[in-house]
Image 1 (cartoon, rainbow, N blue to C red):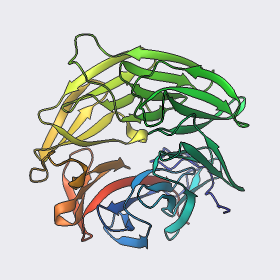
Image 2: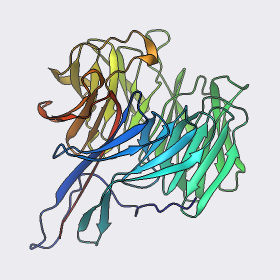
Image 3: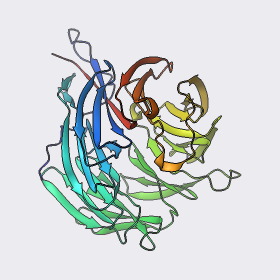
Length: 391
């Protein structure tokens, strides 16, 4: 199928400069929200609290940033398909200023199909969907799609990025079908192997901070410089609790850093330039966390006691906490719907599945701003912000 990707423009709270008579930039913040059981996705305006659209999908799924700004991917494991949600956020650069163009949200269904889609990663106009069921990878871009395969079927990932030498794809590898991945291969656009690393046991969790991609491993975080295409590894701090590792990563854009989980009751901040970790212990077990890439000085963590915490990532310490929700227990596994959160544009969106609502908070003060009633059991949420002039 042919896809129309939005123009590649920065979709964040922008610091815009222009002529004296230029209009003041305005901001839009929208979020997609999936349901724990229903095959649907809702698009919300977090500034007004309006529900802009609801779309039927193949099933419940996970949300990740898409191939183009303003777009999100929705991987529906049980349905075997990946959809794209276009939030309707557009920014067009005019050199001395940028224009904000808002449009109705859209659903682009069945961008990729296969057994058990899991990690779906996008960037530079390409969306790579990894299918755990057979180890296949579908790369979608303007003009069509192509399919390739990892060495065996496993719970893996394919990370697309753009290097000075052209498009590249970082693909996980496993020792046997069904085993946890233990390394990665770097492929060029034709699928030829350029490099390999086999020292990332139990690989899980990935993110990009500017030119560096980070991968969570059992014994540290593997880093790939997308400019030089060189790998290096940062070991976890000595003396830590046995078994603690990064399983989920987020990367900053305005600050060069990674934030990750580190066992059930701690977070870690990685400075990739210094090659050092800082560990932040939490007062209770973690439910979810979120980092706004454009405002990465703050990390937000929701704990099972219903508290929301703001961590200063530069000082690696909790600087504010507030009571937000009643207790959500971690017992019961994935069958139980628990809150998720997403930060963008100075706002926090927090799902509350038991009460069928989304709470919107001020990210700086953690003060509640509004409540959006959705019904059902809102689960996954991903917010994006865009800013520019409106004419």
